[in-house]
Image (cartoon, rainbow, N blue to C red):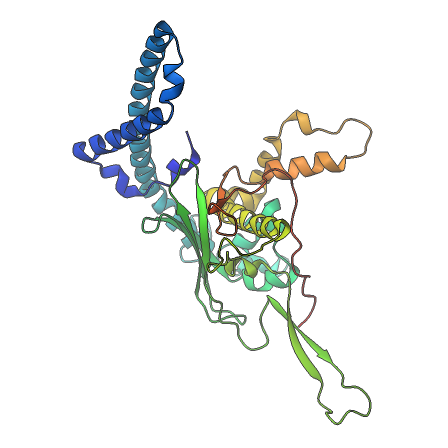
Length: 367
């Protein structure tokens, strides 16, 4: 069963009997079409073998009808529990941001010997701490990013139906870095036998003057004797978590005759795949288990999932290939193809599991 069924919209939960029948018939038509393409193979079989295969095809049809019902019921179950999760997420938001207080907390003055942080409301740096506990996201968060991520109040996600996909929402308190109170990242998916990422769209961040975390300002003194006494100022892109909201894009105006080298295609595919891994990690791990990531419990259990096969071999030295495999297993389990018009045939599937990472801009150390 492919993973893309998990992204069925909640509307699928309300299929009528007629819609269900149409879905089954469409599946049968597709199977019949496939069967027509392989009619030559059946004709080469002995009569008795052909009869057995026909019975097997009937069994396959029965299986596919059950599979259709499974998809429908799973969509219903997901929609049901998503509604049950919402009150818990709301309560979490209220406690984290100090909107409500938990039982047992008093408003008495804090003794002088107690840490100053005891007087703070809510749970400071909740989402920043949770994301940094995850290896994949920790690699994206620079020291400069932490100042802005301390203002992160909540992260949510929702499915979208037209086009198919999902959207992440990051809610920020007023801060000195940018004007946006909401940053979003939307992933558009193509329906197929496997999930195919068509494109990702992020919010344009309205940075306050001199506060951009995705660029650094370089000043160069003019040469001696130069008539222009003013320093030369230019900006340069740099590493930042907030590059997540400016995802890599596949050119839309390429023709089949355009000469695009394989290295360029592979680099773009790796970037798109990595971007999707970040989004699915936030959706599937951070949002539903944020408290466990904050306390560090999720990071410990995430590591233990790998099992004894990745344990040290006893020589005290960790092989680089083994470490790469460990990091790969810690990544999101969502396998996704990348839709791309950079290759003939339209969709390009990345070489998964090779652990290669394309080079990212250097980290900004200063403005």
